[in-house]
Amino acid sequence: MIFNLEAIPWTELDRLDRLQALVMIPLSPIEAHGPHLPLGTDIIAAADIAAQAAARLNAEDPQRPVVLSPALPLGCAAITADFSGTLSLRGSTLRAVVCDICRAWVGHGFKNLLICNHHLDPVHMKAILSAIRLNECNLFAYAVIDHDIRY
Image 1 (cartoon, one colour):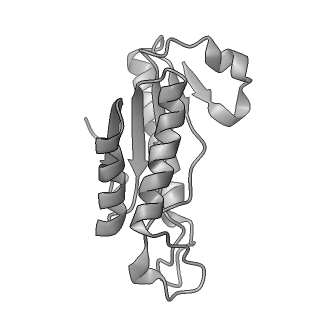
Image 2: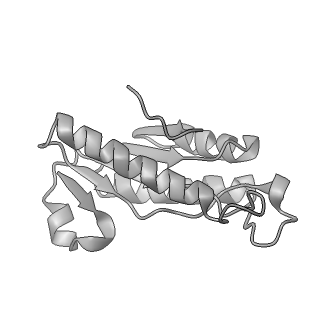
Image 3: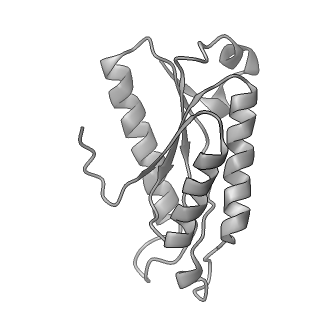
């Protein structure tokens, strides 16, 4: 079962088996990728990867709840910060945001969280990995650099 968080009432989310549910959180920055690609390249890709992974998980086990969180267009992109449209956070800010989001899910009893990321800036990755270490849940980060998802 796949649930799009922004499209369901809280009562439907409240009925899910929190110990079995997997919450997928797409997270990547808005940043310049040259004159030919949209600023949202990374977050579009992260959301697509989450949706494809959710579909595959659902095909393997249709009874396991998968919750797709809205994509969060946040990240550290200092290397492209001088290009118009790049929105870059400090590493400490991103870490705090990821921690707060994860604590909210854990506070509601969800234990299995997956950050779907499509951005490999070292500060960005360090912030996410640092947030993972600070949370008491099964939190994973998955960085994808292409769209060829394989198991």
